[in-house]
Image 1 (cartoon, rainbow, N blue to C red):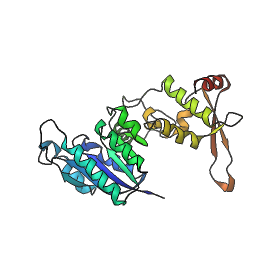
Image 2 (tube, rainbow, N blue to C red):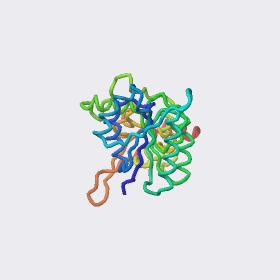
Image 3 (tube, rainbow, N blue to C red):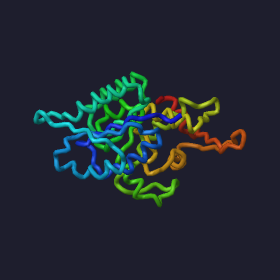
Length: 253
């Protein structure tokens, strides 16, 4: 069942150029039944949003900056989020900001049983990222749209794509070990879910791959096996650490 999502956007913190890719991404996770953006619309630097809001049916919420140096937008978003939570009209939230001030809000919403998606730029502080169930980088969405011709099996090379580090490989390896059967095999779908729980901003697109499968294939430390699924369904993919790496993964997990 699709989640009904409340999409709350920090207009003072997010560039308007990302809106198309952002809304397409949100649609993958649920139905955005509430869409609001917060900011002081008397400021000229928010003028670029006006046409985009109409095109995407996003409701602008006016919030004046009452005190210099204080972000009134954050407070308005937090108050609205709690009102929406208690209205019981949604079962998930999408908080769009790169501001760590929303860390406690994300935590509180999850405590209430809400699914929380975070969307922001790569400058987003880690506390806000780990407070979400899943966190998506805006730069990756923009880069993905600009590189539609890139195939799943080929990583892209622009600066927005991260390099796969030893730490990333160790995370995947340990996750495989956590889920492995007696022969070391783990189902790829379960690997992806556990990776998300361990590290909410883990996304194969961060490394230039559309899906987890080609990312795993690109790393020599892992073996992949396809198995027939019942009732004509698509093949199931299982992964395990190569023999020389299994012992290392067990020691570090």
